[in-house]
Image (cartoon, rainbow, N blue to C red; front, side, top):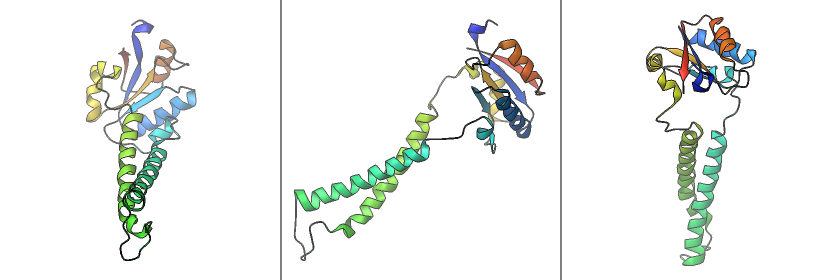
Length: 178
């Protein structure tokens, strides 16, 4: 297969521990544009691939702050500024009565921001990905563990990458077309 038509080289491993060891070895070797595919979450796999930071907690925090401030401001604007009513001699900006709605909007906006932030950062929904072209990839949702080194990796050279992956004792190697 021509290098311009190649998405990457994928290796299939028999179990999660073999995949985790292969991912650590691949990162140590200097490959950085690497993905792993498993039928269930594997502890420490993300860190083995070099993923150290995720922006989802920060996005969730920003959503919570925006929801809390928005909920408080909406109530303050309606009760103290736009339509003030003096009920029982209470001040117009009686903040204790704003707490339940402020709390609920904080939780709602934080959870929505976290959910949609995670979807966007994971590039979902993604109806097509080049690894879907490999017929062997269909088993990943059931019992296969795969590691794919992308051709866009700076260190990627088809022959050397195949040789490196073959040295990790995979069950099979698959060239993934674009």
